[in-house]
Length: 474
Image (cartoon, rainbow, N blue to C red):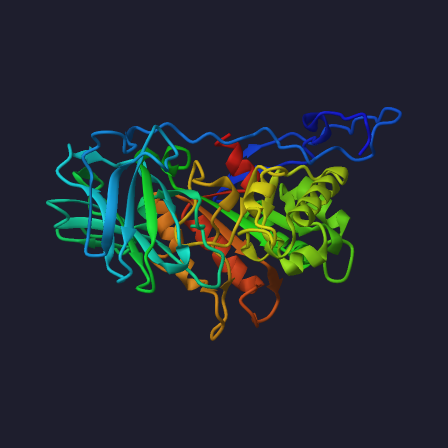
C-alpha cells in the first residue's frame, strides 16, 4: 500500500450515533461523526487497516484463584481416568506447572476436584476456567460441579458438548477460557434447586469444586487444567443483563422490516455485512447502511469482503486468502465511513485454514472481537474469548422448522428470563426478516420480531450494539 500512513485512530472516525437503550429509553449516545480528514498528496486513498487495533482486552483480576502450582491440594480421579500428573511441569500456561490427566477411553468421568475448602460466596461472581484438551476427536463433553458435602448438594454446568460437524469452542491443543455464569446452570441436586426462571436457591457457602471431562468411549483424551477462578460477573456492569440484536448477511429486510420494528422501541442493532453484496440484488445499499447508522444508532460491522469467501467460510481458505479478505473488508468499511471494529464469522466457523492457521488469530489482526454462533453457554463481561463470542442463532417463529423456537427466549424461564434474572450478555443472531411465515431457520417474521422486542422491553433488559457493549468493558 502507499508509503505514507495515517494512524488508525485518525483513519477510523466514529461515523454515527450508537445508543444503549432499556425499555425504549436512550441511556447513552455518541456525538455525530467528525468531518473526514483531508488527504495529503501521496497519502493512500484507503487507511491501513491490516494493523491490529491495539484494543487488546485484558481479563478482569480474579477475586479468588487456584492456578495449580506446587501444593495446590486438588486430586485427580474418576472411573474414566487412566493416568495423571497433578504437577505437570512440561505443559502449562501460567506459573511453572499445571494438572494433567489422561482418560481411559471408556466414556466415564475423569475429574480434577477439591472438597472441604473454606466456604465461598459466588454472588455477583462467575467461574473462570483455563484448560487445554488434546485429541478432541475423542472428546464427548465437559462439566463443572459446585457444591457442598462432597457434592451431596451441587449445581452442574454442562458447558461443552463436542461436535463432529459444527465448529467447536474447544479446539484441540489450544488453551481455552470459559466463563460459567448463573444463567447457564444446567441442573441442581440435594438441597440446591433452580426456580422456574432458572434462579438458583443459593449462591453462597460452596466448599467443593470439580472439573469433569468425558471421552466418547472411542479413545483416550489428554487434558490439562491450569486455573479455576472467581471473577466479577456481568451483573457488575449490567444488573439485568444486556441483549445485542445482530443481523448477518446484509439482507435489505434489515432496513425495510427490522428497522421500523426496532425504531419503535429505540433499540439499535448490529449488522454484520458482506462488502461484495452491498448495492446488489436484495442486499442493503450504502445509503441504507448509512441511514441505519446515522439515524437509528446501528453498528455496521464486518462479515466478509468477498461473497465467495463468505460462501466458503474462512476455514476453507488458505491463511493468506483469509488475511486478504479480512484486510479488504476492514478497508472497505473504513473507506465508506463504517468504523466498527467487530466481525462475525461466515457460518460461525473459525477453526483453522487449509494450511493450519487458526482463523480467530487472523481475525485478531483486523478486528477487536469476532462473533461465532456457538450458544452452549451465554456470553459475558468480560468475554472469555473475544474472538469466539457466543451467540444464539436460528431464531424463528414458525412450526416444523429447525433452529431455535422463539418461545425458548420469550416463554417463562426462557433465555430472556435467565438474562434478566441472572445477568449475562445474550447475543442474538438473526438473518432475514419476512412479512409472512418463515420457511427456514434463517428467517423470522416481522410479527415474530415484534414479539421478541416487546419481550425484551417488558423485562427492562438493556439493548446495545456489540460495539457499545464492548465500550462498557474496554
